[in-house]
Length: 388
Image 1 (cartoon, rainbow, N blue to C red):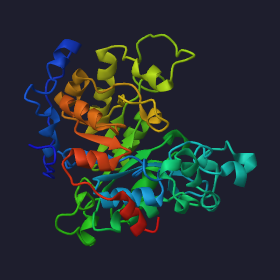
Image 2: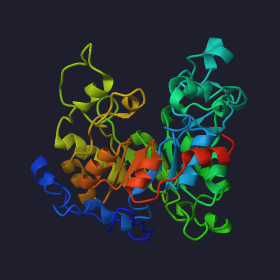
Image 3: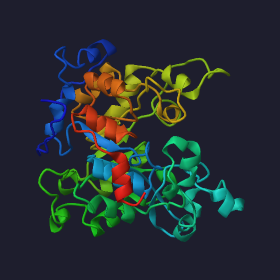
Image 4: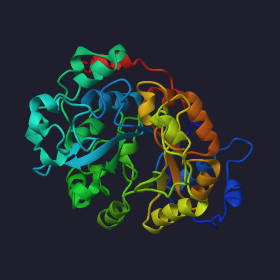
């Protein structure tokens, strides 16, 4: 199977013998012929092979989680629009990553007394008063556009409108963000997806994507739920048992037990510090996979190290290497897919694909699509077509 192949065949997941040591797990690494081990698993689960997951949209070229970022990702032809889900004070589901609003809005100007307040303390009307785009122009002047100034925070409904509104029909890859702050958000999400025709067979009531266009949004894999929270994974299993679920992996506090190591040095970047972290043991890693499988997850989402992580942008998205060959072998032997976050460089796509990764979260969808053999597209033309 070539890397550009996409198949949406429905079948049951597989379950094989579990590796019991690093040595045995390493034997499950991709075969020497370069065929990714996970390429057979993705034909048995209703998820695209070689999945292209647009991390907060096309968030290298446009402000994350905003309208132009999602429109660009959709029109480029990604499989999934990825978003982080939170709930406003008045109960509206919104696409916001950070727990607070200071990094990528002008909250300190509009609500100076609440600059550090959580997203959950704001009503939707208050959030809509914020500028969620100007920060991008200031941080990345080489990619700045006047039209980014004044962009609004989006509701889940607005992201769904974008997913449904073009020739391509991408799916939605939704994270329950800090779910402990939002009791019942999993059920709120179920009700919203149900009302919008994104659960069960409801999508059949909508016109299908045109022939040759991305049609993930028309398939049983149209929604994937992701979470770092074990409690939220259990809640999602209860509220949406038929929706594919992925357990995200982190090392250290709140995640997999880390091996003892030196603290971060005064002159050491956070990305360099993360890159040298190691899991405490194969058993520590194994326990998270066991939990994922026991609660019906179809895959895991481990973190990656970006080879070039010294840049103003790339340094934010390079973490621990939780996708070593033996780790991917463990997941695949358990019948689970591996979707890696967050990878932006062709060299890293190649490196991790050779290990058997089944798909990537990426800020640079255009690069990943080109890596998978799709033709180069004019991002500037796409943005201009939408008025940006």
